[in-house]
Amino acid sequence: MREIIVPPLVNVPPESNITDLVLRQAAKASNPALFSRLDAAGQWQDIRATDFVADASLLAKGLMASGVAAGDRVGIMSRTRYEWALIDFAIWFAGGVSVPIYETSSPSQVAWNLGDSGAVAAFGEYAHHENIIRQAATSEGLTALQNVWQLDGSGLDEVRAAGAGVSDDDLEARRRQASLTDIATIIYTSGTTGRPKGCELTHGNFVELSENALATSLGQVVSEHARTIMFLPLAHVFARFISVLAVAAGVTVAHTPDIKNLLPDLQSYRPTFILAVPRVFEKVYNSALTKAEDGGKGAIFHRAADTAIAYSRARQAGKVGLGLQLKHAVFDKLVYGKLRAAMGGEVAHAVSGGGPLGERLGHFFQGIGMQILEGYGLTETTAPITVNTPQSIKIGTVGAPIPGNAVRIADDGEILTKGVCVMRGYYKRDDLSADTFADGWLRTGDIGQLDDEGFLTITGRKKEIIVTASGKNVVPALLEDQIRADALVSQVLVVGDNRPFIGALVTLDEEALPGWLSRHGLPAGTTVAQAVDNAQVKATVQELINRANQSVSQAEAIKSFRIVPADFTEASGHLTPSMKVKRGQVLKDFETVIEEMYGAARP
Image 1: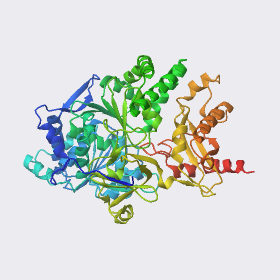
Image 2: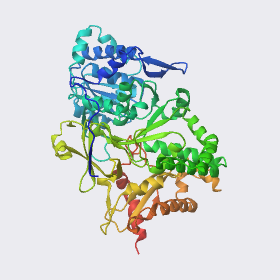
Image 3: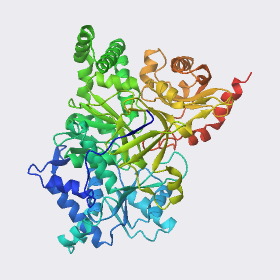
């Protein structure tokens, strides 16, 4: 199949906007709890739809009184927390346009987002963020930026108080000005290369995509009686869309801004579904494996994992043998139940996006009783173009198009898309918009294929395809995902563009290293820098590479590698906030290592 078009299941009135979703919940007799937050005593307290609307309205009036006009841009620089969603809706109630900023952004990055969007106001989480915003405004002469408020302290109370003179009628008139075709947010791509581009996402993108997603069996997972905990950055389109989708469905959403608190928060809040990027699921699996091996139960865990994968594959094929059922039941008590309990005990589903998950992990989690619904999308597509749903799932694929969307595979394998999910264009960049669209189809930059039922499989990123000196095309993700699946490895970058063979840079997982050293009889105090040159570490990495090489041709196989002592992180500038490797930056910063690898390998 080269093209699939799925008509919408829900047609939304053109005068609608995102605020209608929350007003719909507030009008229900059930008045569902849309959010939950920890109080001073550490207890989760629900926030009902009517209370949320009332507070968002007060803040919206304050924004209006402070000079935010319809269509004006307002920045939000904060970690993931309840107030992020509150401010987001307040901006929409005031007819404004939200501009998310990652809380880890540098002053120059903040200046670009606020300056390019022409923001008139901004919210920072703490004094630190406010200072960065003000520093950026001063250094770049952002004269349009008139107000900066903090989420912490008395900042929000100041905004609420400022709106005392704005009437309900004035607020309602402003709220109604935005329709489906109007911009709701400008999200700047985190950018693995070059300056971030501002994606104009409309109210229609969020509302129509949400309504059509909920009209599928995904609506059984994301429903009024469901709970989720948000820990991904709300500045990223994936978490942002799920946040709006949750309001549309009446889900109760909690937030945890610090990933270090995720495990206890999961156990106290007990979500029914979660969302994460693939690296989080890799970490969950590898942490469980490491803990088992450190406790002398590695062999049991490996057998349990193999059984879970076999069980899931058998279920997908439509037949589970009695022997496999019995083994699965035993491991459910010994292993799987404990893994589910660690995540709160009630997580039945997870939504994965932001990169390829891998078939093995998908089957493992489904086999332990947590179905991962993998999807695919971009900032330019309001997140999901396609998604697996409970009643229509093929592990190893990213699902079929959400109703209202279409996918086409170009002659060179590039994935093209159009539909309710696709952005209006790049803000103030008609030139880029023209290059990105072809006959109404958005060029995604990814390569993939559709099966005969319209399920999409991603095979790589078009611009990341490596062409060796002999002209062989190599998709690095096919090798990287397999090697990175081991607990010892943190990151992998396959190299070889215009080179005589394929090589790789590998980093070690600092958290997993101590247990690995102990199991292999090596000194407990061995640092990552020392482990890089250790013969046993090198031999283990070589085994992982050998195993991955079995899945590709000889010309595509990794012939040489180097373990580097510094991990790729967001702080080092080598990862985006959504945990994607900035390939160009890594190649630049480790140029000496790469040159040495190829030089040493010459005959």
